[in-house]
Image 1 (spheres, helix red, strand yellow):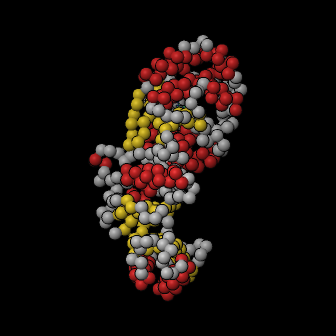
Image 2 (spheres, rainbow, N blue to C red):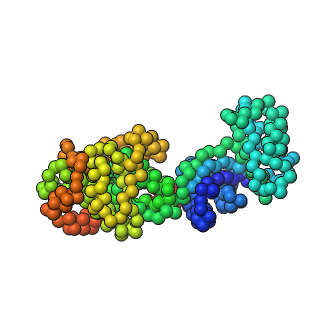
Image 3 (cartoon, rainbow, N blue to C red):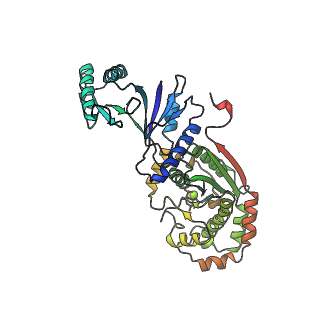
Length: 394
Ligand code: ATP
Ligand code: MG
């Protein structure tokens, strides 16, 4: 039987959290690997072992492990009885089909009662592999690394480790609501919160029927893609065109962007409270556009009672683009749309706003009514990964 051997960063955890972290990681893996044919999960000494019966789709298992938060790295492994002759046989067998010019052995002794030290195992196996293949040992840049972990139950033998995404298991840190536009930034902001263990509920504002449904389609695609990282998602599609129309009639152009944002925050907060989310997330980065200045962030914060977290605040556009490409949202975000903010947005938004001038402008709006109406008309869409319908599981 083969296994997926999963390592997690245990040492960075406080003692009390460790058991919960592990429990959650195991649950997320059980759920996330559904449909791949992967079997039961064991927990030998600080690692996880996912059984991979012959019928398992190993490529798919690997793809899913590579995006499961909490996974530090993983490899395909097998058990070998605690006997150096059996280990030599297993190594010989494992490397037989492989071609490599350099290699290294990395033995790690979890079981301190085993008579040989890690170094002795390295030397013994290194000599064997050299004599079998003629390859040289290279500790720095080996083409092939052979890992041997000495545990109570046996050796775990594996080759080349694949890095996981790290982070904390999805859902361990509570729930947040992310204001998800169709743009590049907010999906990355959502991802970064997921990586820290937050379960993200999405809130998208659209101006249909004043514009096409393009931005809603993008929001759906983004939410669906990001669901791969957190198993289930809820997306709220909030009609915002009517609100914007009222703002245009009552508020002078320079202040409109911040007024929109404050209204979005109030509406998102209502939804957040409904789904018991404990913070709001935006994709704002300091100085990226005129509206994302420190004074404007302060006036936006003033409209909220929940904390507003901005995971991208210190990132450059280039770094954000890079991350969007890595997680797969980039291609969706760059599709053209008619974002609600392009509809009624002035050319020169104020870069400095004060709570006082905003309150004066907002006095001319029926804030509570607008917020209530938008929340009431919000449409909810749900996503699950892997999809719960059976036809997708082949
Ligand atoms: P993004 O790339 O995320 O669209 P941006 O650089 O275009 O961000 P803004 O348009 O100023 O910046 O928006 C700042 C943040 O406000 C966004 O990151 C997002 O969190 C939120 N936001 C903006 N428009 C919408 C929308 N239509 N629906 C939901 N949230 C939005
Ligand atoms: Mg945008």
